[in-house]
Image (cartoon, rainbow, N blue to C red; front, side, top):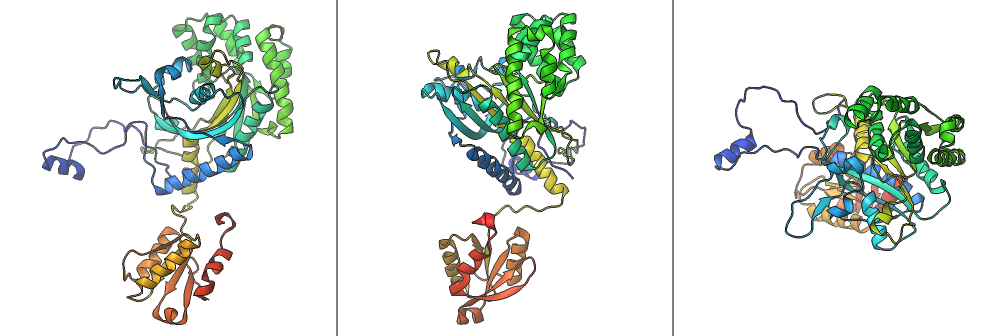
Length: 490
């Protein structure tokens, strides 16, 4: 099976046999020769692929609405100063737009910072919102790692002053609901707390001004071995070797509520004000996890850091445990999916835009739909399941010539009744061609009109899959089709 992912092709030496059809056409016109391709880090989605994506979006939005969220939309580009200083080392990945002699603009890096700007600009202190939109990263694209330059994010956020961990655990619950509903395989939701990380860095001897940059290094542990991360800390970030080794002892720990108890017994951590506050919050978090039935999917993992600077409290990340099907790119190389969801608490971000209103704490989560989509698409192909790219319920066909007007009239009646219907755009199509079209598109029902049926005011209703036919009067046709709809089609 192969889920083809668009990406950089390997450079191979090959003898050019001649220009492609598109190249030859432009050469003949005397125009500049170019290769038709998508930009690096982007891909096209065909009708079937979009059907998979829309189905995923539908499930995600249904979950967001179930939890009472409203939706907003924000511009795909922002003032550059809105985005800078919010992402730490990842700020270098922001796409800047060319100066057009006016405002200095950049493409949005995520949906979180624009949301915080929206709250500050509109003086909103309580809001539960969801948003789905494209974001942009000036990253070195790697389709084999699910890393794009343009991709969708599906965000859910809760803004407002509430009791500790109550909205946070609901975000984790939402993550579990969505990942279960999408049915992409077994997964784990790793959780940690920024205050615990800061306390850990403090007791290990990391200088306070290096907390965020060392946090960024630790964030790479999900895809980079500890030895490489340790080398980066020492050689690039000039951390003492002994300090790095002490960090290494902590980041190997993971577990459940029992790990919280174990860390409380560590005198250095329990007496550190950052770590102690974080551990108290995590203890409460696990209590709520049990009430919300998410304990089975949660792992307290001290290697989880999430490199973005704006996180202040709990952080979490959904990670697939092995891949249920093989996913490969266009060069037949296996794709490593990695993280499929993430989020955390960011209490100070709104205050960065409105210093007079610093009391808008927020927590949120995001679904990595592009990576999940790759898995869903691969799973469908591996199972040999054909997915429809249209929702047509009925195809209106004619068995003889000169019946196009009857066909058009019947289509109009079906459309007026809210039934999804199609017909041929040829006035006198062959019946076999019409039926084959139904089979190729997976259209479940075909209405066949012949001269005899017109005279008797009936139609033949054909089950395309079984090829069984029955006669139905035209006056009863609409109700007959509606009664036999699948429940989800209503």
